[in-house]
Image (cartoon, rainbow, N blue to C red; front, side, top):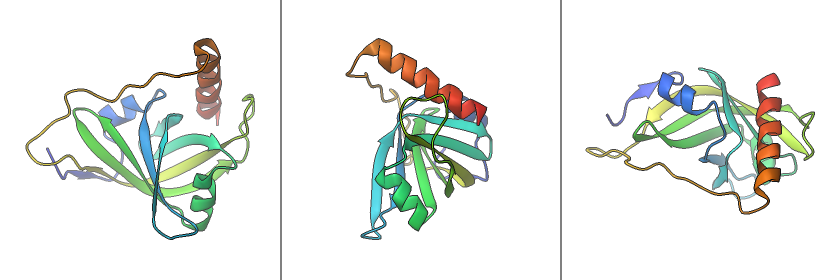
Length: 151
């Protein structure tokens, strides 16, 4: 059902955000004040009102959030497309127990909106493959997701 708005994550979205997955993140670019969209995969629903994600702590995403903390996560799940809007802040500048310099960002959710166009549903969710060493990728993914769970 299109255009449904909730103040927090609905259960199917919370469940889908318990593992690494493809989402897009929209921020306000710190130089142009225009939209900036990035694809990320290290994302975790800490609870129904809070989402964490991890990115390189030198990322433009971090600069954008430090300048304007309004963000939107777009997720395709539950046969629909949702925007999860909120205010973001760097919670941890460098995640421990992770070999990369990753920042942990916390989003306090203000609204979750079903943004799928009327009269349709998603029949196949996006999939992706890691194009580098599969074992190394799996180890790193596990380290990052575990560090986010502990935060």
